[in-house]
Image (cartoon, rainbow, N blue to C red):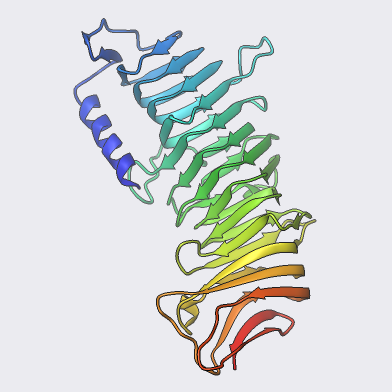
Length: 370
């Protein structure tokens, strides 16, 4: 959990311990108590703090202040967030039955922290994020209260992310499901991140509907496990020290960069869905090398499938002062079979007249110093 989340949660616990029902505070002093069942609270001002012990029911609300909900936060029509929201349960309901959708817009200045789970109750539910959304373990790693359902994210509808969307739940079980015969579309143009030790595998329940993840720009960062029915990366970065499953039959083009490990040395595993494949046509792969040990070499693994590298831009960087010696070799990419028509290497200079050799032995791409 990051320091900001820990600090805010500390405030939440401190305030909530002194209250037994919903109250509204202002910088200008105490305001009259508002009902626990909040049906219409149109504007929460920049200087306002709302704390409740039970539940919020939200219709057409704009938040510019701070909201702390110790129980459930239900959105029945629209909720625009420019401030802070910390809630145990965050639900986007099915709308008003008049053709309007339940919609949450977390604006660029908004910060939403969810401690237990989210339900999106309708295929028409919309969650737009331009700020930061974090699903974190308020109870600590591997904490799953008895009343929490099987999933922390039970989704229908559409998620549009242009900000930061973080799922960081170390629960020793899958925390992501699509609900019923739901259709879920996750559209990423920001940072969509799965934290270390987090399992977010939508494909784990084949009886449910389809989850499509589409990245038009931005970054998919996975340090745990992530899967969807279909993953289409049209542009941007794929990175992390984890496993991603569900790639569809789309070519990774010259606007796509794969960086195993990210800022640190690591290994990234990619797998297609049943009808897909991992196909690179002018995509770029960045590899960092800090030593001859496997733990000091970035590695890209195509798991249980072939890697079709029609045209591959390979960028290699030396780190931590490491200087390769003659005879050193580095296994950087592996697959069942690697089909490479052309590799365009961008390699660091070596001292003493040494050179690089890039080899595809059929199952691995190996760098050798000679």
